[in-house]
Image (cartoon, rainbow, N blue to C red; front, top):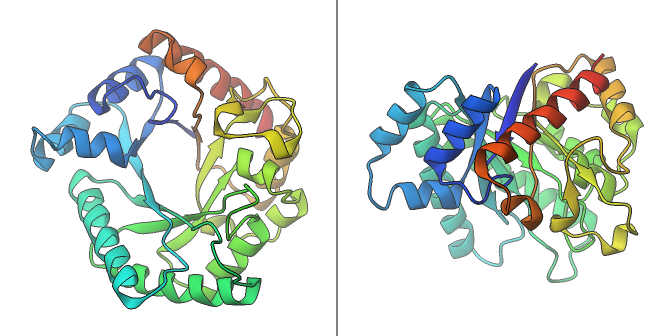
Length: 276
């Protein structure tokens, strides 16, 4: 199983530094953040980003993320989202990155689940057409916070099955899985080939309503039932990759390589336990 480092975990690093510390720590892959790519491209060409990975033992796995792609208010907003999809899929293609993550919107109006479902399917079909031009796949990430339109694995999986395109799949993030009260049983309903990305992390022991992104911690140190999640993933035959995605300011104060080394240690230990 490939082990990955997400650039949000190492916010104190530049994109170049992400690649360096990930490689030295022992990771196989990195997930790049859009803001770090944009910073890189302020002074360098996209070809140089491709060379950065060609000269490293780690490979780019996903770009995070096209954000808030559904529930657009008008055709102009939808078109802008398709243009953004085109932009990031083109970059992914040029650097040999197979996946781009798509994050749903928060609910700002009175949309019900049926309307959310239909709108998301329609938008993903259009985005799928764009991504196909670049041979890139889009991974839908459900977000467990109460304000978001797609909160559970079950709903996200139903949407992906309705889209029924080989380049549209899922992100399962253990933090959002826990926050949104997704069930372990819902994992067993998923086609393993539709799981494009698996984010591993843990949560502090706080009421779920009080948890924010900063309460993510290294896997194995919190209250998320990682072994049960891993057992269910193992049962359906998933064994492709795990990637550590944290947003913890406390960790961002750590020395860069030390953070990457600690990250690898916890990801390796938890992954071995989950998929034994």
